[in-house]
Image (cartoon, rainbow, N blue to C red; front, side):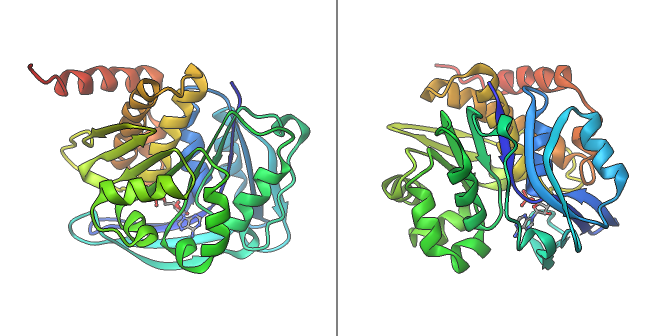
Length: 302
Ligand code: AMP
């Protein structure tokens, strides 16, 4: 089944207590696509400026990501820079320059307009709504991500979006901000009342909570010896989930539990390398092997 993503494609500057690197290929749609491509072909809609390096574009093309929907606009590419604290969990956003992403007017190639699965990755809420409007038919399953910036600056559009999607993926602090509920279960249920029947709340190193219809499921994060760089973990988590559901075409509560496992494993690989390295140096066999190991770890005697 076809999978379409729209989101940021950009240049990241990332600083951890041990390393600092600049001009890295990043963006919500990029991390998503690089994780989802293990499971299914990915169509990508986004915009970059004239300064976007040819090797970044090539890297995506080499991974069979469909770039027909990637526009090159006059101006500069989206840029983000972040700095991790010693605990490698908390992060300070140093800069977000939307540049050409801020005025992006998406155009969908005809082949994209009938996608079965649509992921509205982190980006301006009005862009997410526009892409939904451009679809020729409503996709079978529409999932969105959002963040504190958009919750505080585009709340009325976000309320409309929530009424039009099947699932929302967001982190714990964003869920609390959106609902003004502290307990995550209450926050998740409150979001379900706002529209999406499925809510996934990410809790970083503590895993994720999935509410789908009446089902409630929790999954810890895959334990790692060392976290090198968690940038993009949330987007690749969503990529693993959506890549799996698009390939299995299973959006039942049980299918979604399984998808959460693939999302968690994809995110773990992201954290193990700097930037995209952790995802670029593996293949589907590595993902499946880690899923088997994780399943073993999760055995709970009756
Ligand atoms: P994550 O660590 O999962 O939050 O994802 C980090 C990625 O999201 C980076 O590669 C950034 O380029 C991108 N990003 C950061 N802020 C934004 C934003 N406001 N809108 C869209 N993408 C963003």
